[in-house]
Structures are given as structure tokens and as C-alpha cells.
Image 1 (cartoon, rainbow, N blue to C red):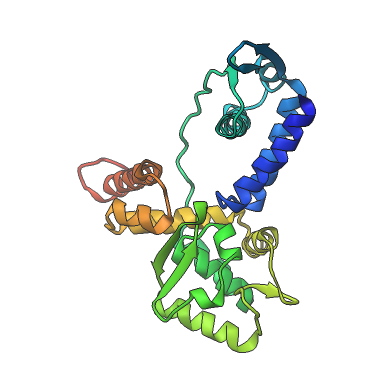
Image 2 (cartoon, rainbow, N blue to C red):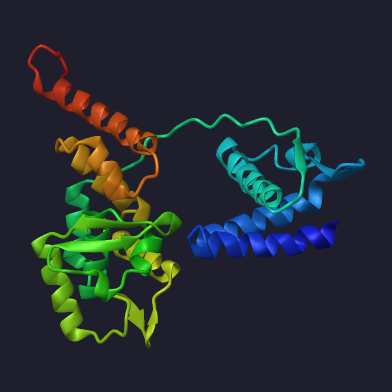
Length: 282
């Protein structure tokens, strides 16, 4: 059974890459979680005249990971559930035991202020400046930016291949387009916007560039925070949530709604500072 599961695990990870369009980082995380889980879970097999049922008892694994934070545990169990769902869709009959959900508190994203982003842009080299500007003005995932092709960029729009191989079109600011044109005039590329020696730069390379630039202005910033900054700026500026959800490539508007909570919190703070009857001393 262990050998069969190992073989199916490889097929599952290929499915995530080729069919679902998951990023290399996510696939690696899934693989590591499954390796760990399959080492600890108890596998029980029952056969009847009609079918063969396999039960995965997760309790030994849950005891092993119990000391981790709730968000990490939830991600590990989610990877295992996805694998089991894949196996069931492909002819196996697997039941999960001790599969209670883990409650994870929803945390508000931490956007970076426009002022701090501008400080980083002021010290960035041309490639770094373009990278940060694209993340901030298009709200891209780092995986989407790594896969962005020059042919996907027009004068006013960028076509992005997102999760699940779904395309979406995002408006391109004139200033951003000028940066792209200037960058391409000095850098020869075969297909992708960000390349080195004819090969697209990896997500980790782009992530490192972002981290390095912001460290130079004493800030710790991730590419995903710039995506948060993009979404928060749009919502605080009055953009309809349905439009922001589509621009971000969210499969559900519920995912986008967390940004509205942050926007409301900022509006409350601004109100408290501005209104003379609030009694807030500054």
C-alpha cells in the first residue's frame, strides 16, 4: 500500500502542476506535507464482496504536529485531504478518521504604505524598480509575475495566467508601461519579461530581489504584501469589491472580503483623527 500511495503521490503533484496550475512553491509544500503525513498515519484496509475500503487514521499524525500553530496544521491537513480527494476521484475508496477541522483565526493582511513603497523605488535599480512597480500596480502573485510573457503585455492591458490556468486582464498604467518599454529596450528577452540567460527568473529569485530592495530602506516586505497593498488601495479608493476580486483572480469574493475589514479599520482610524468630537489627542 505504501508503494501504491507513493506512486499516486507523484501523479497527484503532477496533476496540481499541469491541470490545476499550482506554483512550484505550493507543490513543494504539498509534497513535503504528504511525505510527513504518510509516514505517520495509520492505514486500515477492509474488503467486502463489493469494494475495498481504506481508512486513513490521522490521529498519530495529528499528535505529531499538535505543537505547531493552527494555520500550519490546517495547511498540512488540507494537503492530505486534497490527495485523498484525488485518490477517490481516481478509483480508490478512502475514508478519513480523526479529520476534524482546525479553527484558524482570520488575520488581516499587512499592506505597505505608498510612502514606504516609494522609498524603496527611489533606491532600486531599473530591474528592481520594474519588479516592485508591477507587483504594486497589477496586484500579481509572484508566480504570475515569474510567468509573465512579453507577448501578454499590450499598451493598456496585461493578460495574466492565474491559478487553475485561468486568464484575467488587468489595466496597465501608462507610467508602468513606460518602465516596461524602457526595460525591454535595454534587455533582450526570448519570451518572459524577467529572464536570465534565456531562461525565466525563478519565483525565489524575484522574491529575493523584492526583499533586498526593501531591506535597504530598513523594511521587511514580501511580494504578497505588495499584492495586499494593491487590493487595499483600490478598496479604500472606492473600487467595487466585485471588480477587485476579479482583478486579483480570486475564485470567491469571500477571499477578497478580508481586505474590506482592513479598509474599514483604516477609515475608522482616519475618522478618529479627523473629527473634532472624537476626543483623540495626537
